[in-house]
Every structure is written in structure tokens, then in C-alpha cells.
Length: 232
Image 1 (tube, rainbow, N blue to C red):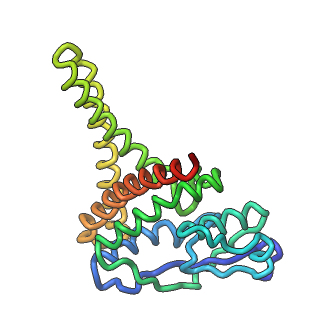
Image 2: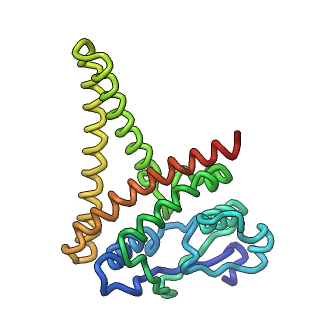
């Protein structure tokens, strides 16, 4: 923090309620993204210290953002040429969501509010050390898969056997996208379970990754509708 180029410092996040399987698995996934960054462009306010002069210079936190303010503050600090240092010994324990319902609700709210954040900072949509390009792409792929399935069904019902190839192409596209997503969740959840040396976490991690993506898709869709309404 004594360096004039450092605007803040972050540290690793550990799971406080790790005796329960769901919070422990949420922790495995979060720790894989937050705890060993090559470069910190943003981090969670769960474990973050900022220099007061830098915070005042950029105008403080955006209190109009209900969520995503950590991404906003990190983006504005680093865009001014400051770096966020990472201190691996500065560990903070966090109490993760104890139920699947509360976890999905949290992820839904994140996604519903993300459009406001991305419209303010389009550069965040490129991904960063916390949110990868693949994470951003998942709701788009799920929406595309569902759209292909729905349009294929409409074409099949409306035109019958005359254009079966058209509906078949849409069904195949939908299935291919679904298999791509399911395969990625299976592989990623297994990788996290192996890394944690906790194979019992594999099915729970699969549910976390797939359920989160569905919550993001629904939340993002609702956020888009709200954004369009507000800006008509």
C-alpha cells in the first residue's frame, strides 16, 4: 500500500461455514476465481482495502448500484492507472449462502442488475480475473438453445412435414448447445472436486454451476426487460 501505483489490496476468501456441503462447494468455486489471480482488475469487497485518497479521487462507490459495485470500483481504479495488489496472507472468512434457494436468488439478482453495470462500463463485458468470458457467454448460449427449441417446435407445428429439415436443424442446434453446456458443467465441477480432494462435492458443484447459469439467464432476461422499459 506504500507504493504510489497501488490503489488497493485484496486477499483470499475462505469458507466460514464449510461443515455444510453446499457452502463448502460454493467456496470451492469462488476460491478458484478469487484466491490465486495473476492480475487483479477487480475483486470482492469481502476482502478489500482501498487507499482513501484514490477512493475519493474516483468519486467513491456508486451507491446507485444494488450489486456489482465491486466490479465498478475495481474498473474505475484500474482505468486510472492504479493496480490492486494481492496479499495471499490476508485471509478473510466468508459465510456463504446456506441453501440452494438463497444461492439461486442471489445469482438471479446479480444477473438482473448486471446490464446496468455493463452499460456503464462496456469493457467489463470482455471478462476479467473474476468473471471469465465463458461465464458471460453461458446465459447467451442457454437463451439461444431455448430459442432454437421453441422456434423449431413452432415451425414443426405450423408447417408440418413439408419443412421437417428446417425444424430438425433448429432441434439439433438446441441439443448441441445444451450438450456443450452440460458437458462443461460436468468437467468443471469434476475439476473443482478433484482440486479440493472432495469427490462427494462433484454432484453438488454440478448443480451449483448449472443452476447458477439458469438463474443468470432468467435474471439477465428480466434485467433486459427492465432496462428497455426504463429507457423507452
